[in-house]
Amino acid sequence: MELENTAALVTGGASGLGEATVRALAARGARVVVVDLNEASGRAVAESVNGVYVQCDVTNTEQVIDALGSATALAPLWSVVNCAGIAWAQRTIGKDGEYASAHDLEVYRKIIEVNLIGTFNVCRLGATAMSHNSPDDDGSRGAIVNTASVAAQDGQIGQVAYSSSKGGIVGLTLPLARDLAAIGVRANCILPGLIDTPIYGFAPESEEFKARLGLGVLFPKRLGFAAEYASLVVELLTNSYMNAECVRLDAGIRMPPK
Image (cartoon, rainbow, N blue to C red; front, side, top):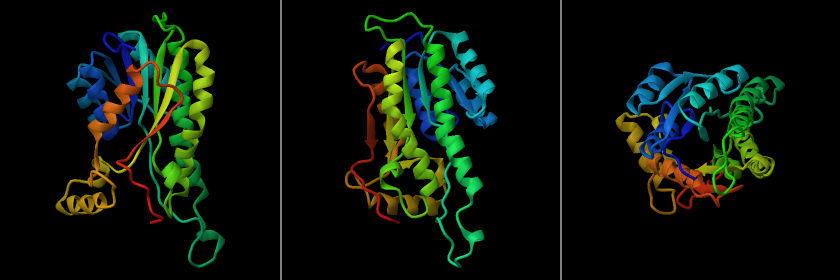
């Protein structure tokens, strides 16, 4: 699948995995719409690649439709990449045995709402926009890449909400691809491991912490680079025979319980 002279929409595009993806797609000739709630960073990233920034909550249908309109105004929309997400850590029950100390149910709902429902919301609407494209020689009209996490399979203590949300993204991959085959849209999923993004911070102690994390990776013993994630995104978009797959990008790590 060709990227040049097409439009791409990247959620969570203002930083980390999303920003690296925006830059990789722009380097391949795509016009990119950066979707994020962080206006300052989102605009800066979009301007640096001659793209467009749209402030958007991925759970808000009207805002997503507006973002898709910004994309189709640039060029036919052939790529959607979902990187938007939030994290949380809390054990299922508290140490005191009180009901009030159990995992916050509203937080659990919020994690599912943003990570899983938000991802599906962008998928269903993005694919609808792609259905209007003229097909290429393969009958393709576009491709979607979603972001799960190795926590979907190796969830650690305290990750019950996060792992649930990411496991749901893994679980929707095959039926999503089967649904969208009718219009020639592929869907794949990446499960990143420990990737060096701004979530870890930039202070000297952050570098020490990241170095310790890297020791637990099989090989190479370091955190992954956001550019390595973006490279896989480009491959999953452009390789027209990649469909319905969930690919771990983790240098062989298998996460311990904690």
